[in-house]
Length: 278
Length: 278
Image (cartoon, rainbow over all chains, first blue to last red; front, side, top):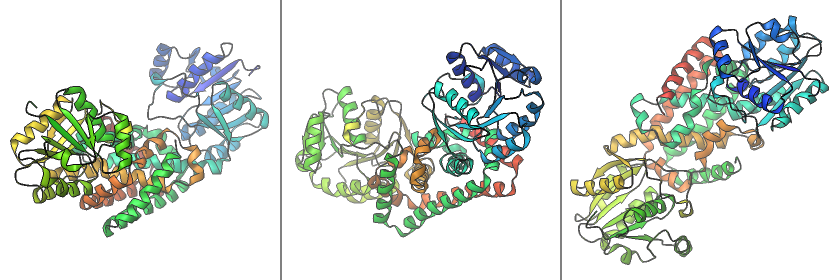
C-alpha cells in the first residue's frame, strides 16, 4: 500500500461507509474520498464525517485516485465501469464488492480500459442494513473476503494486502464457482426469507418468536441490491430453488405418510450437519 | 401461589430446567422437584443443583405435588398423562409446555382424572438448545406464554399468575387457533431450516455467511421434539408448506421472466412488512 495516496469510494452505504472507516483507521496517510450523485446523500455524508473528502464531481474524484472502489448494486457497478473509464489514471486499481461475480468479470473486461487493473471482490459480511449511518469500522475484521477475478497478479496482491490489513481472511475462487456457491449459501436463503415474510398473514406477526425472527431478519435487505443479484445469478438460483423445493417435498411426503422414524432419522442427520456450520 | 407447597417437573431439559431455576428464585417457600427416569440424567441433575430434590420414583414425586409440569416432547406428555394419573392428589394442577395444543387438549380430557385441573401452556421461548445444562433463569422473562386450554377458570388463573410472576406476558388463545398460528410462525420455519441445512452441499459449508447461519441455526433443534410437533400439527403444516412452496414459485416465475420491476416491487413490500415484525 506504499504507493497509494488516494482511494475513491463510489457508493458510500453500509458496506462502502464501513470500508471508509476501516481504511481511515488503518491508513492515516491515504486520503479516502467518497462520491455521491445525489445532493441528499452528499449532505448526509458531509455530516457523518466518515470520509476525508466528499464530492459530487466524478472526474475530480477519479482522475488522481490510485484505487477506485465500487460499493454499489450490480447493475450500477457495470454502469460505473462506463462512467469512470474516461477519467481513470493509467495503472489505477478498480475493485467492487458485488455479491455475484461472473457478470461483473465479463463486463469489467469489456468496459474498462486496458490500462486499468480490475479485481473482483466479495467480502462475506453483508447485512440487511443499508445506509452509511450504520457504518461499522470493524465490519471487515475476521470476515471472509473472496477474490473471484483479477486482470493481473500485482493488482490482486495489492487488493489482497488491503483486505488482510483490515483483518479479513482472503480466499481466491473462480467467478463461476463463486456464483454457484453463493447461490446456495446466500442468494437462495434470501429468496426463502423474502418468501417467508411474504407468506405469513399480517395478524400472525404478533406471535412471531425467535425462530421466525431469525429466518426473516434478512427479508429487510434492500430491494434494489437483491433484485440485481437474483437476475445476475439467475441460472444457479433457479437450479437451487428447484432442488430446495424438492427437499421441502421430502418432508411433505414423510408427513403425509406419518413416518415418525424416517422424519426423526432425517432430522438427526441434519442436526449433525448443522453443528459443522458453526 | 399461596397454597402451593410443591411443584414437580417431569422432563428437566432446557425448558424444564430454566423453569426450575426461575421458580426457585421467585418462590423460596415452594419445593421444586424434578424427575428423571434414566440413571444418567438423574446423576446429571443431581450435579447441576437446579432443583430442590431429584427423584426417579414417579409416585413419590407426584403424590403430594400441588402442580405437575410436563416439559416433554408431545408424545411423552400424552404418555405421562397415563403414568401420573393414579398418583395425582385431588385438585392438583397439571400443565404442559408443548408446542402444538389441540391433540394435547383432547388427550388430557380423555386421560386425566376428573379431579385433576389441566392447563395447556406454550411459552414462546423455545430454542435449538436442549439439555438442563443450558438452563437460564431468565428464559421466561418478557416471553409470550400462550394458554390454549384449561379445565377450569381457577386453575387457569393460578397458572397465569405463575407465568406472570416469572415476567412472562400471558395470552389466552383457543387451541385450534394456536395450532394454525404456530404452524406458520414456528413449525413451517423449522421445516424450512431443516431443509436448507439438508440441501446444502457439504463442501460449501465453509462459505456460510451470517444469513445462512441465521436461517439454519434452528436446524439443530432436537429431532425427537420436532418429529412429534410435526406429526401432531400435520394438517396445518401441510397446508402452509403447500402455500409456502407456491410463494417460492412466484419468485421462480419472476426470475425466469427476468421481470426486474415486479421483483423489486415485491421485495419493497416484504421489506415494509418485515419492519413490522420487530
